[in-house]
Amino acid sequence: MGGAQSSEQGQYGFHVLKVKENSPAFHAGIEQFFDYIVSINGIPLNNGDSQALLKTLQEYEGKPLPMGVYSSKEQSFREITLTPSRDWHSDDPNEKSLIGCSIRFCSFERAGENVWHVLDVSPNSPAEMAGIISFSDYIIGSPHMTLRNEDDFYDLVEQYLGKPLRLYLYNSEWDSCRECIIVPNHEWGGNGSLGCDVGYGLLHRIPRKKNERELLTDEGQRSDEATYSDTIFNAPELPVSDEEVLEEAKQISLPPSPTAQSLQLSPEQQPSSSATAAVTTTP
Image 1 (cartoon, one colour):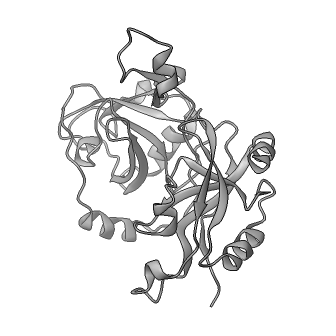
Image 2 (tube, one colour):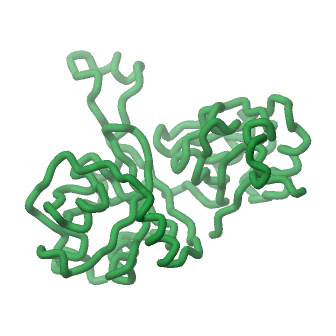
């Protein structure tokens, strides 16, 4: 597709941060965190023109609209058809989105480099209390700041000592993303402020399940064997107050950790060292 090729050259698109349930984006199969909208109606979006995007969505309200999407998880482009509509939120007068997702314009050229694989999680640690799961969870970003390199994550944890920290997680067993709230601290009774080990680098990137064609070329291997791929995103900066996060933390039911390991992220293991736009229409 021309739009996809053009966007591939530029490596820019609108990163989908959240998809609301039962929205047009949800029914079109757009995957939050991993998908980038790179073209609309055959027109590339690598120039970041959000007004052109909004105008096209308004013009196609109630009509099928072709879109080009790049998946950082599958490392491939695909075409989808989405029908912008207001009917999906008819019971919510405050909802104005035509497609039901939040987006941010950014590059996906090196999106797979910044991911932290959760290894061991200590019992009764901040990580366990936050529902972080050892080995199958991957820290893929935070709404508090953009994580552009390895040190950014450790710096972020230090900045939020004793304060609620939002983290975006991907779980390879569920093949799904979620947000958790953790409070880093040194008073929980163990080493480190998180109470978990994390791995960073090529060997700790998110595994991608092989497709049917790849499985056919690997006779004798198990069908659920995983390979590593570049799949991640840099989260945008969001102005969120600690009071709001603490209040939300009281209402969130987080999944329990199925295992409790003994190791943790200790200080000596740490290295030395955007805005979100909801696709809406105007009144």
